[in-house]
Length: 129
Image (cartoon, rainbow, N blue to C red; front, side):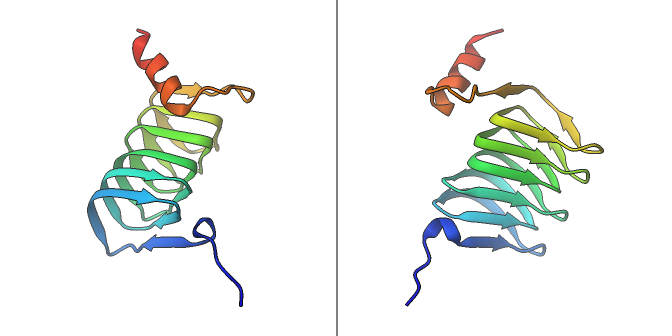
């Protein structure tokens, strides 16, 4: 019998669903609906073309094709596709903004050899003016 790890599964927030609150866990999530609150996942987030997110986000990777308003901390990669829009600050190891995408905010890249945690980088960023 095959087993599926939590990292292999993906939850779906479909386009006719709205959530107000906090999402946390060890899964991936695909958002096509509306989410307002906080996302903290040891996994990946995909915001589809119909997805609207108003939240601070801490994840491994995030792909944005819809609209996100909030600050993002990605352990690995942030990618904004041509239809995507991000309004907020981002901290990530890799930041990929495709032609046509909209990004309004500040970016902070984590050096690839860095042993600092994401939260340590965020604290450093907040301390500088």
